[in-house]
Image (cartoon, rainbow, N blue to C red):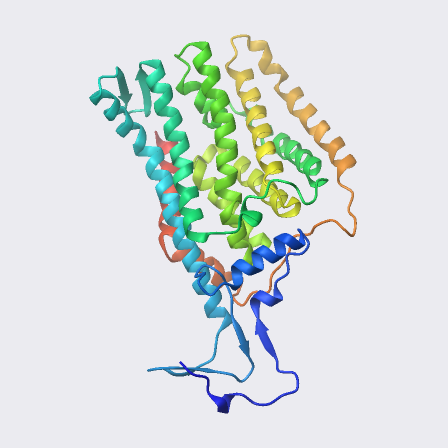
Length: 390
């Protein structure tokens, strides 16, 4: 592969296109900016969007002739490569979530443990210690496997993907404030529903799964679900994936990871709350430069959801009357905290819009119609339909 000298015209200041050099993530921190651009610049990294060319310069490719580097083609290639990995990881998540319990139950029976599996609702019963171990192992593996797939494939620097110390600490209270407001607004409709939809929330579903167990076992499992799901889901959505997608623009990364959050929950009753909260937590990660605000706010969100759920299932029916008051107080605290914490300044980190070479229509088509990610989207829709019917 050689350059065509006839294509190189002398110029005192040649017009150069370099998509990596044009990107700048210094609004987060200079250390982040340096680590991210180094990752994108690596020639061995097939998941980075990079293209460098000079005007009127071409490269000779055997069998094809002279070829001019095309930023749009490179962007499409990078999106397809990344979506391939995300689709495989999400498929692994769904596979483990829906099949692993039955497999672990079978293995437990082989070694003589008294456990059973109800295929109609997917619950495990029998020896409480064995059942608790099976449920915990499934929760860990369904998140750990996709996270490892991302880690071993993308190899994003830890300073970028798993940074904990906030670069902008004042974003922490602002994120809490917006989380409280979003929670109150998106759950108002449940006050008027005769069905307890909160049973499909993380802790609501966990409570029903272990409701027949001793109170100590119930407490252990609920705390485990709260901590494990909150931490692992944020690592899954806003660790490697968010920052890999960020090279195509912050809002592209935030919206796509929010759609992935809906696919992970694959429940039509939680679409609105998952979508809105994931957008808030994605913004928090990019603006603060840390996973801590998003992890904490996800824990807070799950605890408040479980509070609403407990008000509905508690034997004392009078607690249901306090649900509107609870949501009003959450909204009021959120607004007050928002007024105290959100003060725009010139130094406030802003979301970035990177220069791109594909139109929005081409991006949507590439994401939704090509590769395994589109198949996984279809599977999640099927799972939601099954939930509605059965």
